[in-house]
Image 1 (tube, rainbow, N blue to C red):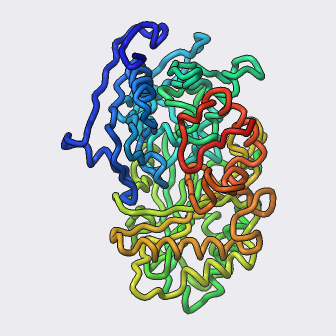
Image 2 (image 1 turned 30 degrees about the vertical axis):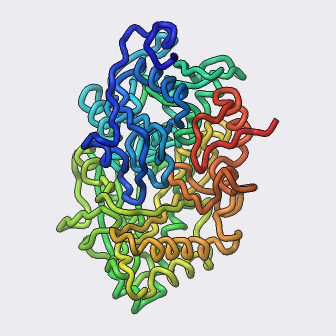
Image 3 (image 1 turned 30 degrees about the horizontal axis):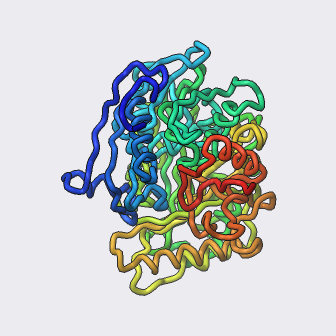
Amino acid sequence: MRGEFSREAVGDIRELPKGRSVGPDDPRYRTLSQGFNQRWSSTPAYIRLVGNEADAVVELNRALDQGLRPTVRGGGHCYEGFVDNDGGVILDLSTMRGVEASTDKFGKETYCVEGGATNWDVYTGLFREYARTVPAGSCYSVGAGGHICGGGYGLLSRRDGLTVDHLVQVDVVTVRGGTAVVTKAHRDDPKGSPERDLFWAHTGGGGGNFGVVLRYHFASGIPKPPPRVWVSSIAWSWDDLIERPSDFETLLKNYGAFLAAHSGVEEPVYQGLFTLLKLTHRSNGNVVLVSQWDGDDPGPLEDFVAAIEDGMATRATVQTHSAGGLFLAYPEKHRQMPWFQATMTLNGSGDNQRGKYKSAYHRTPFSQVQIDAFWDWLSQDVEGVDLKQTLVQIDSYGCRINARKPEDTAIPQRDSIMKLQYQTYWTDESQDTDHLEFLSGLYQDVYQETGGVPEIDTDTDGAYVNYPDVDLGTADQKNPAYPRLYYKGNYARLQSTKKYWDEKGVFRHAQSIILPKG
């Protein structure tokens, strides 16, 4: 049986399998069957806490021998239920969390991140040991595995690009010919080779599509974090905005105009600025703007805030309400702090709740139709539904993110100025329909000019694979929208890579890369 350990089964691996299985009778089973998002839970045959490379190979082969579908979990945030696996096997990498200096298959120095590490593991390991970082996300508990596969962006991305722009190798367990093997795929593998395609597919092709990623290798020249940053947190009262609706419009127009003017690849001043405008529902109390600025002089940050408020009668105050899991109740509107401390402070993971998400890339400032839709939905009273944690988060984008060509990595959106995340959170299962319908209605209304979705190559440019949304279609439907909206023109190459490395479709979920016909 392939599930039994042998040197032949794992190639040149010189370690014994190390891990543990958690079955239905284990007290850990119910917890490990559910991720961060409380909407999703399943009943797998068992969960394998993968302990090392040999264990990943042996356990994947064992699952195949038993006819059990494998799914892979890193951090387990699970915006949709893609890791859910009734009757199958969840390969949980969360005990593989190493972050250390290493070498790639060509002997070049790298920083290696294991597939079960969280963003916080990555930041802590790289910063404390090596005074380095990667421009990854602000939510500390997100798994680096899923985050990296989808492209990855964060508060340093305007300055340093996407996370995958610094990736050089992935070590991934693939299934070819019915047997699991470890493949080390590198960006410098021969052009046109299957290994080069496999590496490329992990620079934005999404998690759970090609295999079990054990390790990510980043170039030795990954960024040094700024010693200190300025953090700004200001808010505008919804009560004041309701009295002055034109201020809401002015706020959005100013924000879009500023980012349109200051998001070029060679932007001379504001590459070190990252901003998050949180358009909450009116029941929250405040619309909030959080910013990080990496310069010693706060002047440009103050100029940015002044530009956003230009023409508004409503003036900002310090933030006084939580907005999307982030609450910075500072007595002043901005303060300087060490970068590592700011990274802890700006974490937005929030509580374990039920959640739904949508996304969009924007290439231009908001249209009047979009602004009106935001106002109509977010300012309305909805009886009997708690929407305090419903918001549209508008992140700054562009600058060095847009230095790459769409085809250089699997993530193709390389000329946007804003990236939007639609979010709603709740705890009562009986309110599922209310929250899902509200967010869906808001989203469709904002993009009514392009058929209810942020169509590609228009003023918008599709959606983000790391914020998956099954409303964009599923793999079992005819002509789903998600391949176009997530991947644009890169989808055909992803399909051919899928066919070579996973011709049987072992790794699949509701929004997988669909195997090409023939």
